Amino acid sequence: MRTRLRVLGATVTTAVVAVAVPLVTSSQAHAARFTGGDVVVYRVGSGGASPLTNAAAPVFLDEYAPGGSLVQSVALPTTAAEGNARLTASGQSRSEGLIDRSADGRFLAVTGYDAAVGATGPSGASLTASDPAQVGRVVGLVDANGTVDTTTVLTGAGVTKIIRSATTTDGERLWATGGNGGVVTTNRGSSAASTVAGSATSNLSALTVQGGQLFSSGILTDRLARIGTGVPTSGALTDLPGLPDNLLTYGYALADLTPDDYAGTGLDTLYIADGSARGGTVDKYRWNGTTWASAGYVDVEGAFGIVADVQGASVSLAVTTPTSLVTLTDPAGAAASFAPSAPTVLATAAPNTEFRGVALAPTAAAGPSVFLRTPAAGSSVPLGGTVKVSAYVASPAGVGAVEAKLGSGAFVAATQSGHVWTAQVPTTGLKTGAATVTFRATDTAATPATTTVTRSVTLGGSAVPAGNLPAGSYPWSAKKVKLAGTWKSYRTSHSPSGKGEKSAKRKSTATAKVYGHGATLTFDRSAKAGKVKVTVDGRSTTLDLYNKAGKPLKKSWSFSGRLKSHTVVVTVLGKKDAASKGLWVLLAALKVKA
Image 1 (spheres, rainbow, N blue to C red):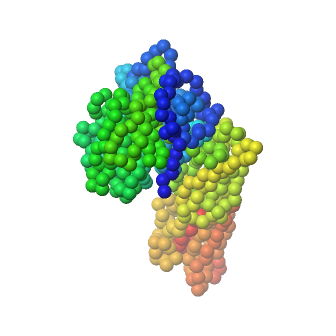
Image 2: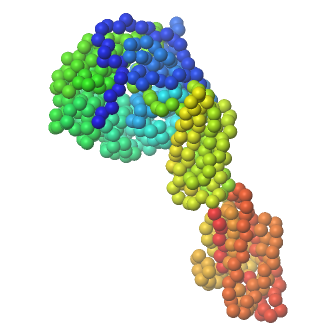
């Protein structure tokens, strides 16, 4: 069943007086919650006497109620703070700034550049000419509380040079695209991305996930395409059949209005903001089971962003141009025709500012904003000691209790530094393998609300210092073991390699640094074995390896506390039991405990 949304009320049938956008702003720390049914417009510039230029300009997200009144303006960061990067836009690059609401409805995905206001590309050119390695391309998320996360700054190879749009399904996995690059994907907070589809010559515009499928619009080539199947991390661009070759597609909106079904998505009706003819049009297409057939168009000069709301049999559309936010209604959305109401201007951009993309306002249950920072999604978390679990937490109602846990462990209270809360969560006693980080925060509202977020990691990895042996079993011939004096190899079934190291030379040593919670040394014993000194972290023990029956000896040490490096030194003493016929020290194996 389709979910009906109230957006720009299809009840608006009479002309609305155009309202110029006041240049009020609100920082993310003081933003109000978005209201379901409102729309949000990506605005470039704060106004003033100077026109927009190639230089970086500030970005605002303007929220509009269905009647056209401005609810609030959320300012995106222009300075780096608390782990968030800057997000600005190129003032004259009108193909940028398309925005999308996440598939789960909780976030807006926005894009821009990690550049100071007023910055330009090489020799005063647009930021689009800059190298991503020098000026990162930013994928930002804004949640229902108006809280902003700009920790995803893409700087690696393959990143699109002209960043135009992004999308997400859940606020963790992100996709981004634009000009001079294909569609890339990454985890929130990462700087690296992998290519999903397209290439360095691709010229793409808007990414969305609709009907469970990832789509991208483009300029002439790949003018509107589905990408792989579902929401892939790799796949091909497949053009929607039936669309004209000369489309210049910016924003687009798909809907499920009939029993027809395109590619398993359930979608059958398409609206496109097309810049290829007549100065800009909104085009309608219907899927007839074989192809996307034109149902007509209406002139909307400069049409760029578009969002649709199904209201019974009719569809209400909100469209942005560089200078205005307009609405129109398609009263017979399921019909293979298009006779909409005349476009109605709801708002106009203030002088020296421009509107770009438009999306439905994000919605979510009441509770604090929580953007997990560490550990990274999919990362390997070492066992033993503690792991830092941190998140950016904010709430219009104030933040109360904040805590985190790992896997089946207990919750640990987090401490605050500004908006960043951190908990040191124990990992001792947990099992290796897949695990979940859980972070929850409760606000201080009269009726407190709690937000809980999770992230998947793997337990058992270790950040092993150089030269250390991590958890595992090793022969004494391992590369990280240092042998001094005279040693010879011998065969033994007690070694992982089938070979051990032996010496009868006094003061010969074998030294190993181990990174774990314990160590076990296995010695072969014989009637010709002598005595050995084992020193662990400076404390020595003498062992007699004489045994007429040749039974091996295992000696273990346990290390309490946090995971760290420990030094094990084996020294040949050149001494023996009176019954022994030799001085041999036979080292079979070394095991490091996780």
